[in-house]
Amino acid sequence: FYKVSTAHQSGYIEFNTFDDRFSAIREYLQAFPHGETALDIFFMLEDGRIDHNLRSEYAGLKIDLDEVLTRIFEKRPIPNQNPLLEIQEALLRLSVGHLDESRISPGLSGTVHQLKGTLQGFYDYSESVWDCFLKTVQVYEILKPLLEQYAYVPMVPLGYRELPNMEILSSGGVGDDYYDKLRDGEEEPEGDGAPLSEEDIERLKELLKDAKVIEPLKKGKKDQGIYLSNMDAMMARTD
Image (cartoon, rainbow, N blue to C red; front, side):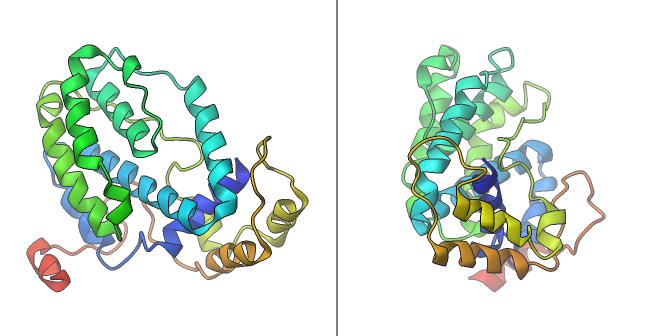
């Protein structure tokens, strides 16, 4: 769990979650009528992109990540009492390939089908946080009927991803003892997961040490960070 969590944190840096469009994306989504849900959707999709890329880049993480997810979802309940929260849970599981549709209420099967269609193959071609933003807008439209019927309830994030640990990222790293633990097999999930290579460990280590200043992601603090007020101008820069 510790290895997967720290690798996910470093993935925000390696795969450019905080590129020059991030602040504008966040501000734009916060302005949606249901901005909190829009941000939850965005973070779910972006976290899914990070995990997908980690699987591709680090062979030693794939088995460990699958095992951590399996353990989490074995104990994580489906919130069937709230249709909006339930469909968001379905989206979360779908984003990591762990959705058991038989556990989702039959009345939401049509929405689940739409979500499956819009996410099919998405992580195979998504290249940036901008792709996750555009996909968030599509998913938001699919969920709009539920958003208009049910009040917002915060999602419970997966333990290893949550919001980035800014103390770890901004302090210059997690310490050399962490990488010693990786080499020695400590803090590893039980199982046959392939260990990270020395090269992979050094790559992750350098990413974390180079992270001196990361913009906070705390969703409730709109006064933090630098924001672009003109979304059209920002979009024109990316064409």
